[in-house]
Image (cartoon, rainbow over all chains, first blue to last red; front, side, top):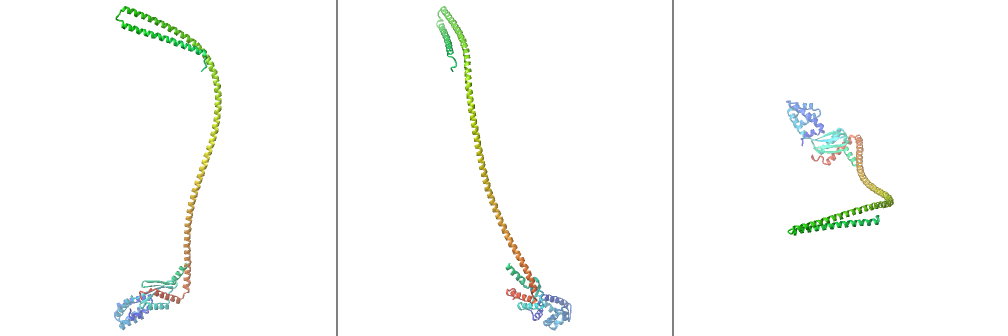
Length: 159
Length: 248
């Protein structure tokens, strides 16, 4: 579905929050690069995206070689294509009871990649009322597997 | 009618007989006079062409005879009248005596009749009193009977009215009782329904509380690893229930 370079990039984009941040950085970088002629794209990319700068430079190099890293025009074109590709990514919405830790995020993201394939990000929403488990929403499908619901069902059966 | 003496009756009978005789005689004379008058007129008609003298003489003679006869008859009538007057006077005298006697007899008779009448009146009065008393007693008795009858009827009517009233009261009582029972059953049903609803609400509240407590206890008891495990379990369940099937 995605090119190996994009796959390398998006393996590091685990959450919807990351994806949004990346998109925002890309927009700024593309805007910056569009009015600039000549070399120095790498500098602009690293300067505009401290979080994803290294990843993007690596991506530019993998996708367009050294020219892609130097030429502002070329870098702009590649990053525009990347931006469009990123729009194809799907989101797995998960309501969870706590703010997930990094290891939590990694474990869930790994599960998502393993079971849903590449090009998916996890959108964590904190909702302490669900106690535990998750309320899942994916491509229009919805399922509540929260502990709160299970407790409710248990008490409902008893009442 | 034997209050007149027998002699008086005899005298009256004679007097009546004499008057009748005189009247008969007078009638005879008048008949003769009529006959002769007719005869003379006949003669005048038959012998009018005869000797006028003879006829006139005969006529005159006849007239004279008639006049004599008339005079005699008048005398006889006068005499008879006189005699009759005498008889009448006698009779009046007799009548006066008879009247006196009659009065005496009448007074006696009146006295006797008055006595009898008094006796009859007394008897009648006594009978009347007796009858009146009897009637009064009967009236009182009838009145008492009527009163008793009226009282009996009134009491019967009162009893019937009481009975009717009682029946109606019982009927109304039954209806009211049935209505009250129906209302009671309805209220009881509503109460049961309300009770069940309230119990259910209370149960739900209890379970809500328990649920909240459980949530709180569980929420606090679960570690990050537990949460992670639960989320991964949820994802597996979702996968088993084909929540992601559209993507697969």
